[in-house]
Amino acid sequence: MKFHFTIHPYLKPFYQKELDDYQTQLHSGQLQLAWQHLERAHVIGQASPWHHSYAHWKMLQFGFKIKSPKEILGQIPRLLVGGVKSFVGKIPLGNTGGANVPPLRSLPITPDIKELFTKAGIEH
Image 1: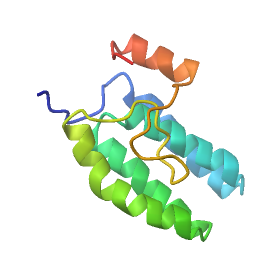
Image 2 (image 1 turned 90 degrees about the vertical axis):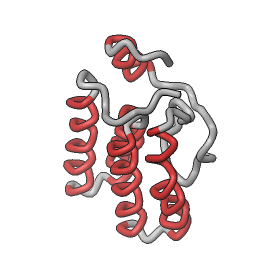
Image 3 (image 1 turned 135 degrees about the horizontal axis):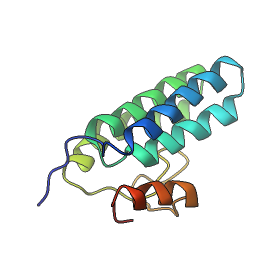
Image 4 (image 1 turned 120 degrees about the vertical axis):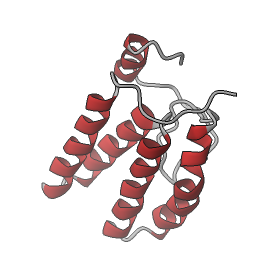
């Protein structure tokens, strides 16, 4: 079994850009666009325990901001378990991380993120 500790160095700036874009959209009141950037950050950082958990933390905060009980309750178990699953390499690739998606369901990866994974040498 291979353990995962951190995000691939190639992916880190793309993960951070998604979080930065999330903040920009959030502050401008563009909640749907903000959420999409969180989902993208989740997909990019999902293999790293820290980055995966942080994406869920931001999603939990977003749930509180929009006063969504479904998102809040959906993020708590994801926040508690997501990083562990990343650590042992048992993640559903492409899963966007929101409470609207079953936590163990793999989803298609967008072509631009798939290209990032390819350039990083990550199987998808």
